Image (cartoon, rainbow, N blue to C red; front, side):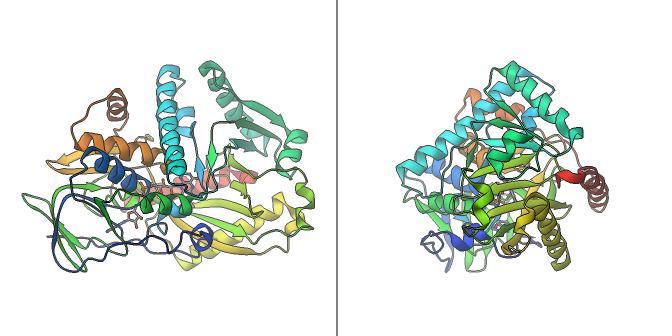
Length: 437
Ligand SMILES: Cc1cc2nc3c(=O)[nH]c(=O)nc-3n(C[C@H](O)[C@H](O)[C@H](O)COP(=O)(O)OP(=O)(O)OC[C@H]3O[C@@H](n4cnc5c(N)ncnc54)[C@H](O)[C@@H]3O)c2cc1C
């Protein structure tokens, strides 16, 4: 049996999870003894839950189980910034291959559409906002990225708007940004509500086991998976743990696990909201990759996300450092909020690949893995999980062909070289981001 040595841990307090009305609504199963399943999915994030739903649709008589080391919503899927992007930065860096970019955007829209259907069908209150998003810059040095994106969108015949400082001040409630590009297709959500709502509404032939980490496994011949409460004999296994796929021995030298951090203020008071007169809830991602993601939420809080660490785990000092940077980022943008405390600060995993492509493969007969969401896993995990389920059932489609073609993550060096190289690169990138942080 191969032993698993690293497990996800909770870092800080995550506002989305702590405030979601769905927090204790998922009635999960308890493993007590040995069981057998046709399909076992390790990881109950957007990828794993999407795969479970599609498998259940395709194989209504099959016995399907999802296992997560944490409670659903406590992992990265419930602790991210809640941007569902139809035109992510991987499309922007696609060397202006218009035809290919259009196909990738169509896949993202497929993911968003699926999620919207489910939200409506099961009445999931995930604070779904079709507000689009801003790609913003403070420093003229970063205008080029905005302008290049605009050029690409124009060539793709996609709608967008470029806004100047005066227009942005009215839209964002801060005069910090001097240029931004607004695209209308992105959606903002409360990610913890969304993922728990999705897990809650899975078909009856899917069992969800929470707080149930995979401890060891044997994947040759009969597939045996060992958890604290018992052993599982599985016909087919899917590993959908994103950053953890490598420590589960299913993604050697392809993934670069990272940690990133976010903080959320308390609800702003009427007086504090004066500078936000007529400003609707919004989301902004940075034109510089190492800059700050920001949201004004519908319940009038400010979210700040920045800071990257080349590691699968975090530490108290890294969390503290991130929180200090979040405070500076908040005050730089909203000096009048200097006395507004962060009610929540947390960190979580993301999983980068060097060429931005995901892992989507059958490792050996009956063993599949998906990982490497490159920080856009709400939408990407949803469509990759869906088409992975189709792959597991042998269903072919042009979407699956495109995914297979664009899911070839390049080699990354093993530790400690990978960590050293990534840390050096991050140090450089974060310094280079300057006032975008
Ligand atoms: C602060 C932050 C902000 C982000 N912002 C955004 C954003 O705005 N938009 C966006 O699309 N993405 C964002 N991301 C990235 C996004 O959260 C991920 O891409 C997404 O969660 C990936 O989904 P997933 O289902 O593939 O993996 P995960 O959500 O990581 O789910 C994998 C699950 O596997 C479980 N697991 C791991 N090991 C084991 C084990 N041994 N046994 C059982 N279970 C195990 C984990 O507990 C976890 O729940 C952000 C991430 C962070 C941390």
